Every structure is written in C-alpha cells, then in structure tokens.
Image (cartoon, rainbow, N blue to C red; front, side, top):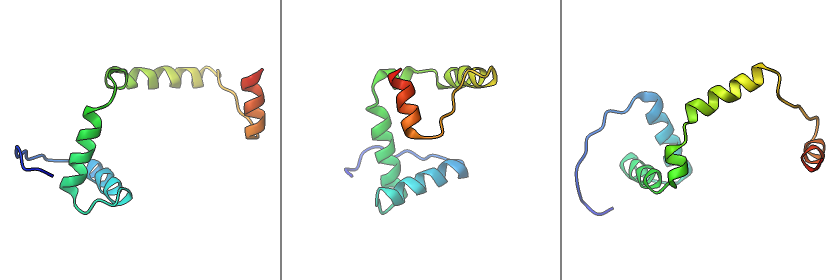
Amino acid sequence: MKAGHKITLEIPDELYEGITDFRKKAHISDAKEAVFELLKYALTLPPYFKDFDWKKAEKEADAEIKAGKVKSFSSVDDFLADLKA
C-alpha cells in the first residue's frame, strides 16, 4: 500500500471483529490493510447499493413476514417449481 494520508479511527469492538474475520478470510496479514481493502470496496459500490435504504427495506420485510406474506418450502425443488409457476 502506497503511503498517503494518515487517518486515526476508533472502531467499536463488534465492528473490529468483523474486520478481523474479513482479514482472516482474505488472507490479509494486518488490520490496516484489511480496512484499506474494505474502504476501497465500499467506495467502488454502484450508486444503487450506496443509496439503497436498507433500514426501510428491512422494516418492509419484517412487516411482510408479520402479515404472513411468506412461503416455506420443504426442498429446493419445491422452491424452484414455485418460481416457475
């Protein structure tokens, strides 16, 4: 990683645990590089994902579930058959 601007962040433990998990899965040797890779990824997301109101979508999904507007399937084949219907 090329030297640039130095930024100091205070990261909550639960978020740091996520960074640590990513670092291990991506075989990255240190946390700074992992944070750099995650920031680089986040900055290249398409606008749709950046602007999407995930909290609103989660509330809507919860309301649908609560209203019983869900389906359950006992197998993938049953699920696929429903999609094709």
